[in-house]
Amino acid sequence: MTTAVAAGLSSIGLHWHESGQAGLGGPLLRLAEDCDQAFRTLASVWDAREERHPAALPAERLQRLDYLHSFPHQATFPARLDPAHLDEFLAGEPITATGAVDLTPLAPVTAVLTPAACYHLYHAHEGSAFSAPVYLTTRNTCFRVEERYVPLRRQWSFTMREIVCLGTHDETVDFLARARAVVDEFLALVDLPVDWLTATDPFFRPRDNPQYLMQRLQPSKHEATYGGDLAIASVNLHHDHFGTAFGLRRGGRAVNTACLAFGLERWLWAVTDRHGLDPASWPKPADAAATVVARTAREAQR
Image (cartoon, rainbow, N blue to C red; front, side, top):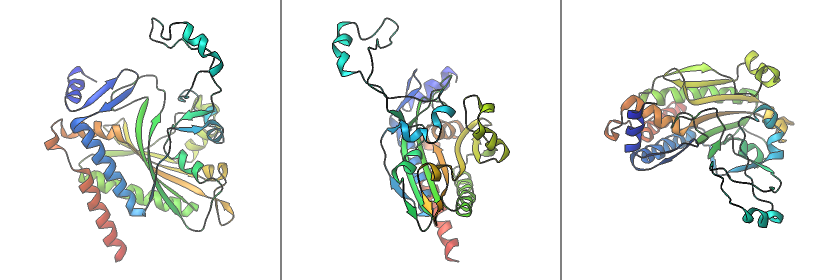
């Protein structure tokens, strides 16, 4: 990112932290909220029910998905000092000359900061049985350690909005087909050109991981990619992976799941890159989403 671009984003509300985190204010914050409102409006195509969840997941639940074997390089853990060693901690300088915390022994670490918003939904409904497809939506701050950080494009902490379908294989496949059509129409209205590219998750030592090999053999992740290299949305088919891990049932069998995910900060980058830094030149995402939903409703009535 050039100095001029960084200064321009700063002038409209970006507060960048070198740790890979972004604060928002002013026009950029208003655009972020407008984008999220648009995504929530798109979720109404499926009458998706909104849920809100905490910042961390129990590590034991997440490891049912083999997450810590597959993505140890991206995990962030919430840690706290062992109460038995607080005097030891206070006896020294808490912060070293390099800015690091001089930690004494920690209490047991039992959670992982949210790596993907949808994980909470499967955990929250553990053991449930469904008689029809279920559609849910949620937003969360997610954490993924990266080799480098770029404002709005690649961050340690970022905001993810997801729309999830829990159902049969056919229902999840139909959901993703419709989701892509909805997103394509929405993108056209806000004038953001993308290419849908086949993708794989960033596994640790991918060629040793059977899940990576399966994604290569049966592509299940496709990303709406802006500017050739920035994924601003994705559609993901999970088969019965989450249903099996969390005892989610449909007709006596593990449910299949699928999700449509939006990276909020990346949308801010795409909109400002495409339409400039002047808010007067920006599209109105919430209005565009309402147009898509209205058209979808008319078609459903035919």
